Length: 322
Image (cartoon, rainbow, N blue to C red; front, top):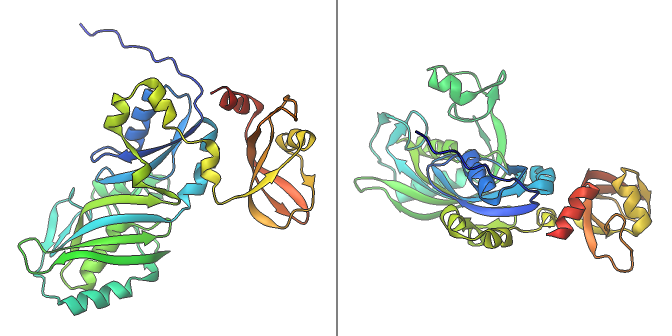
């Protein structure tokens, strides 16, 4: 006989938690575990990591989910190991080896090939990816043994550093540090580098060490979060405005804040700016005693402040209460 399941009493939680995603969990599985630990009502993440990958996974709760798209678009930094001489069905260690070739390249050839992958490059997304074709993820086609045509996409490799390598051992490999634009498939990059070296390759390790302004040193592991008290878990949350660090601050008075939260444009002496974070007194608070709180984001154009993503008065009140 099964013991009755404990019902978790959900509560409003607002903020960002930086998780060091463990090996073997999908991003959504990690998110659901943390959501349960925080007893949060609403949650989302800022871009997936494969189960094989570990590292920085910003998790957004409550009002922070309104700004998660910003970090989907952020540059990412990865540490990865490419096993040379073997191609797999998935491009990583989870797949079957489908081809083996000797590794005959020299150090000079390796450096020349890596230089070729710097800057803007074209990538064909892998079949084992969550990218959708006709509403169906590519990995579902791949599991059915199908291969569908994928359009190449342009991405940018900002930095490609060779951390270490072994070209002549029993398991020849490269360890790379990659800083890249959004949408870059590191598995595809590893496979393409292997092909350019004439021996093929696949990823055996992938760790995201930074995304946007967040790095691995700021993260907490799932194990540590599970061992923490509820108060300690709450203390790990960063404020919602952490997601808007590269936005220009705009401050409004009480009247302006009320109109902004109603979606009304405001006129002012603001220079044109595509990204602003708007602060003001909390709705209903006395302006002289109220702290400045985040109201939302927007942009300024032609002397107008144009609302974008807005917090609700209820969300603002809940943030102030915690």
